Image (cartoon, rainbow, N blue to C red):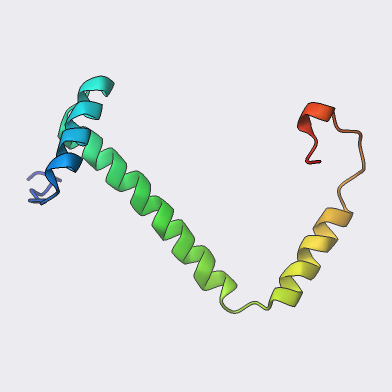
Amino acid sequence: MSNTQVVTLRMPKELKRRLDREAKYQGVSINQLANYLVNIQLTHLESVSILESRLEMKSIRSLKSRVKRTMDNIPERSVSSWDSIN
């Protein structure tokens, strides 16, 4: 038995055209590219959901305090001008 399932997906013609063009450019099928893109985006959304649920029970004050303690443990060093925030 196959580990895949057929899903019909309706999308605007312009999006289909872009997907087709990019799949050709990448040298893969539309199906492969669509699966890859859905997987990447879903993984991102799941990560954000997990972080949001973990942060939901924390106070901003305690989070800031933890970040400050972490930053205080980082040793000072000189930074090249090209890597400077300022």
